[in-house]
Length: 246
Image (cartoon, rainbow, N blue to C red; front, side, top):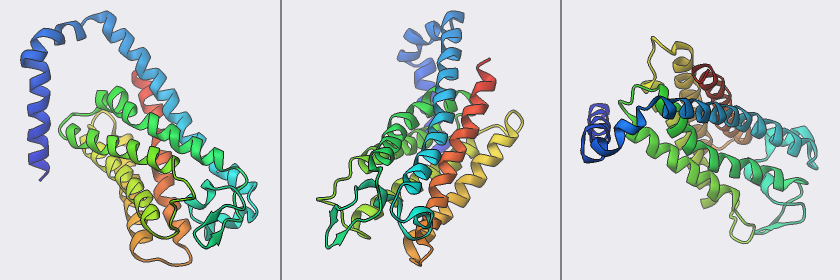
């Protein structure tokens, strides 16, 4: 399976480099001015990426601190329950938790805007590009999923149903992206980032799968492990990209 993905990635790269498109455009991309501009863009993406991870972690913490349940929200209430203001009817259930739903929506919207550009303008540059087609597809799916989650409305929300499944699937895709990035990073050039990508991706994927298949009273906390793995990875990715953009 991985060999087929690597072959498809190589064929696509060959088209853009040596095919008709590559013959017309690629020489311009090799110009020193373009390289300097790309380094500047990478530095900007690195800063925005690290900020994205911190923004989510800090934003959710603030939303929880100002919620009606306080710190216990981490253990007993899902992330999606923070998306709706107090008094919102979620089916037959009245939400009595969140005072700052706009913070959570902003955090997920930011992820939607960020993630795909993080891959193409940052991670792609430092990867060996063996599995970049699958990695890019997963990154795109995560971005779309984050947008859909941020746009969730109470009229269509079904607690514990389709929307929770869709959100969990989005988080799982995000963690699978981390794993594919880990496979595609050189162990000689970026050993720490490679290990962190793989470990965070594996731990996050396991956490999301467990939260989806084995519901317990700890499910909200386990689900958060699968989200925080992505946010921590973004912080590590941001600092790694800053080093190469100097």
